[in-house]
Image 1 (tube, helix red, strand yellow):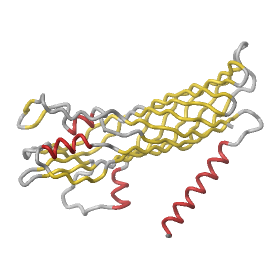
Image 2: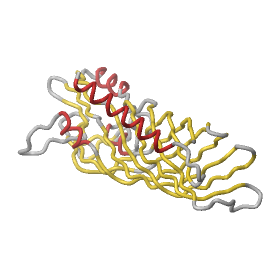
Image 3: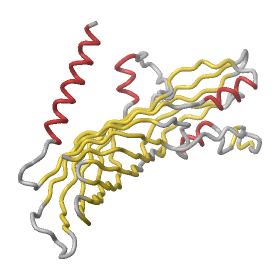
Length: 272
């Protein structure tokens, strides 16, 4: 009950704060916005191991778990994004004689995303090979704050196009933790490799260990008529993760690599 009250309090505080950030500025030198929509993370998995080679005793294929993830193939389902922010304009008068044009900064104060990861094709492949699958964590989430230049062009009446390019400070959590086993073998992938002489972490500590902070780019546009609009954003980048994986046969790979982290979003936009 206490946890539910805490979650409700946080949600109410966030809603109140976001409303305060997007409400209309009478000086017209800034406009607040709220966006809600779908977030597509990475690409579909490739589970075809029919064409592979053996390299120094290990399996070399773009369908291995490691190669899938390095190339940004996470098997993510369509996820969700919620964000709010404000455009701060530098000029009151139009920069162009024909269309009312303003330039400024677009600060997306908070952007939250969540995607579930669908590894059913890998699970079915391993079960068909005689492995038992211990389904653990399959999700990805992020929290970002983005800022960068924006150009707003008022073409006719209340029809406006906003074009933006932003730098995004991002905290990303990848909860992928896959494990399959047979009587004498195992296949697995984890972003939380066990360290020697380290105590086991779980709960909030494990969540914190999974999280990575870094900077990404964001390119987007919003077409709006009056207060209602449609936004699209491309949010590319990568994060360096420690990992450990085995495709079976006793061969284990471990290290630290950069994993692609590309996101495409489409959102309804409310601009006040």
